[in-house]
Length: 172
Figure (cartoon, rainbow, N blue to C red):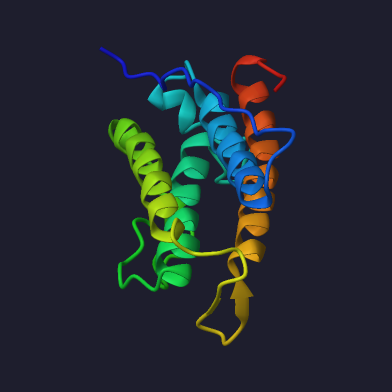
């Protein structure tokens, strides 16, 4: 039996809310959108690159965002001493390379788990709370939320193009 990416019950951000609820809602909406762009595709389709020589694939985007979630929320903001799942200094594009179709289901589960862990890691912190990055920048949690929304928005645009190339599906 061939695994296919599951359908996603997409959340929508509230139109009126306090700032934290709005930021979390927008982030959740973008998280769901990436997974929705993959829904119904087989593992093989998820590893199909847009066009050579690019290594950009939907599965690669899922793996990339898993590490991005972990990096910003847990490693940086919460200061957890945990390694990356895919990224290495020696091979910074590992999340987009060596894609194994047999690992697609696990990659999707890892993203969902990492999003949940990310939310828990900063749930007790305020938007004005700051943390220092390895390069010495001091960043607020508010900035990080906005950055994560921007990161997903950019990659969801990539996902739109990838999905259209795979099966012609377009739209939100």
